[in-house]
Length: 269
Image (spheres, helix red, strand yellow):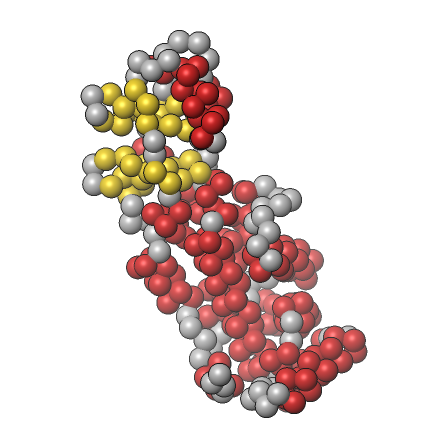
């Protein structure tokens, strides 16, 4: 395996480049599901049983071959689907080319979106689809990029390992032990390569001037942010539910904070 030099690692890809990658190549289509349909005059109870069998939360409603709205499983009772269908709201409709990252924030306001392919509504995305691999790749990429930026900034801000002043002896020893192990395998690294995300967090938060440059208001708020970010990274790395404890809105807020911190990191050259 080729070894990447420290100088090359320091040339961190910009946040905008990562965003551009997802905007060009990974769109909402990558997590969308085909929208099955029923008809206006179908029996509502029968359609509800069908949705239960197929584990559908929503189903499109057709009239004369055109999808004009949708029904929600919990709404259906006696009667026909025409009595229960909902028309599409403009906020629920997005183009198939919408960037995946933008898709995340739409869900701050609504529970589902429908995909327009040309002038036809063909697919649906719900909150459950945010657990899919493309979203996981995006989030893990954002967190990894932030770690790379912090690594670069710490190396620039603290020459000759002077960052040690902000870590307790146990954390320094952990880094040194890992450094020795990796050096024994002929890896071209330096001690700061062995810092974990919790170490980078403490170094940044304990250096007031650096914390202020990154727009982190207080150490307490910074610790809360990094704690949630580390939990998310661990869930992603171990294929756990992305949203185990917090609400989805709190998750979206965490991603927005990560984006903001990345932008501040890029301003530090």
